[in-house]
Image (cartoon, rainbow, N blue to C red; front, top):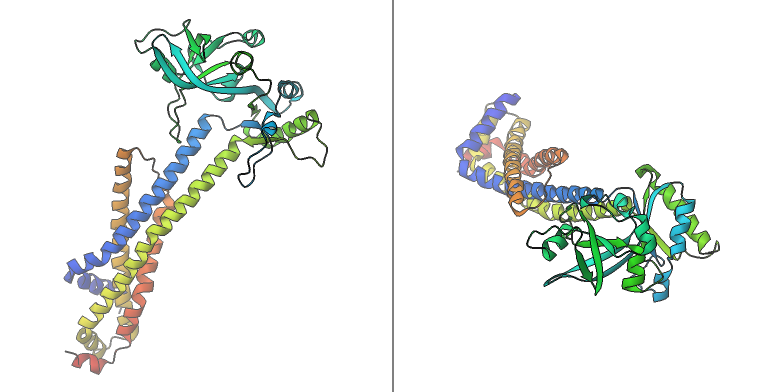
Length: 405
């Protein structure tokens, strides 16, 4: 029997039991839809994280005091004070793969303007920090190197701080606010960046000269960190090697001594987050894929029932010349058609599900390979779980099959 005749018989058999065929497909529909939605959410979240990190700059290098922590071991407080101003100055003078450098000190506290106040974070930086972190001033100007040298009490503020401290819509530029009782004159307002993928408000910050924050707010002589940017993203590894050598030399570390600082790149963070999101996606997909296994067992059960119901039909076909392979192919084709049709409907349901996710502000992205993989898996399920019923039908004794009541 040729393929087209087998196809006609298979379609007729499926259509003669529409409801039962739909129930057989339902497991595949749910399984494929679940896999597609999980993969779309995982891929969309991964792309969203990468996009948010990219907005902060892909060639950023961050230097933190103290050795890299292992196993959650708390370091000695003195180990967290290893970065000094002369480290920043040494990097500034010896750099060749670095475009911008900014020392950093931070303080959390309350910013006050009259009767209005808000909790925020004060960052002590240099003007180069805006280039490193891709910030831009929307209103006013940035503070200058002269302000840094004089430890001037000037600052840049984010949109959230402006909204909280100036709710009546006043122009904040030129106004004075207080942070921990220290007055700061606002010289500029930063362009809004909104929330990042971690749910953090990027506009809830104040940026001031690092010398001002160190001397007037924190009264400390060490740095919290040093932010740098490589000349290009491709030169990041070279820049890290250069920074490591500069700091080891400046800290007078011997070849056998461990680093008393930690260097991390934005690209490294991006790769770590991507790896984490991939792992989470795989776990979700594997969990959803178990429903496909259950669906395959359901198809095999339905096909076994179908073989039993059509025993006399099988016997009659064999008696008029149908071979065992023809009978086997017929039931195998029915199983594949049920599985693949369920897969197509599952893709449609999965696509509608990803659209519904947008109403809950979940980032989604359906990769093309996941659609192709779904078709392949559905076909495989049809073959694997349809094989046993098909062989049972093919191995029937024609005489016994015709006598079956």
